[in-house]
Image (cartoon, rainbow, N blue to C red):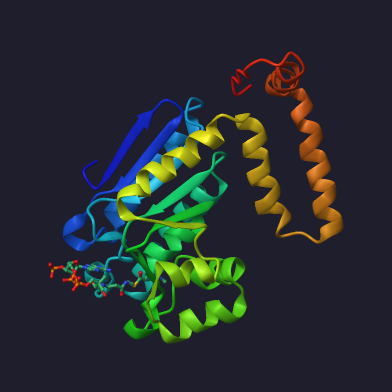
Length: 258
Ligand code: DAK
């Protein structure tokens, strides 16, 4: 799995897209490898939080691989889009938070990759954009949908229609990223955030993710009922007993993801 590096450390897993010669562009092979890694993480109950980043100093992911896409037939384009969309939905639906540590260019499919994650931390050197219209195509991995949901319709349309690149400060201003840090602090910041999340009850965190993601598709009355249902599920977990008992006994919590 040379194009994807998976590292696990305590309750944290880090996925690194490692195709620096093409600025970590996503081709079919990388996407299949990424899918395999996600299947592994899905089953690993010891992993509570996932970080995704790009290898090298220049790029997070510079997009879908233009060299590969250039020769696509309509049929291949559809297959490629279906593969990417399936994987990005896997990330979105993974029952653990995924943090994007964006170390450089996040363009096209790379920006869409970051958008499918739960939280985005950017290096001050990161650059974002959806340049697809300049290549004669539309975004194919959910960019037209997730970008508008995250930054709002006006900012999303400006980025989509112009194809322009924005820097990390602007990405922060429009709400595309949660935080901007110096490049040498990026992984440390992402890991601190991940470890902070991992100290909480994993099932409760997982249910928060489901509540936000699914609730955003519902009307508010249905959504709060869904929240109530999720809240009640917590009382079937050992972690709820542990969290509340530890609070009352004024001792450290020991969550076991059950
Ligand atoms: N694909 C393939 N190779 C890429 C690449 C990419 N997206 N981005 C960079 N590279 C390669 C370059 O070709 C170059 O390779 P060599 O010539 O050295 O062999 C190497 O990475 C270094 O890049 P540069 O020499 O260009 O480096 P610079 O510093 O000069 O420029 C840059 C960096 C990021 C500004 C520039 O590389 C750039 O503009 N790259 C393309 C960015 C881009 O347009 N990204 C969006 C791609 S389109 C769909 C599914 C998915 C999508 C759409 C539809 N369906 C199936 C419906 C998604 C589309 C996209 O993501």
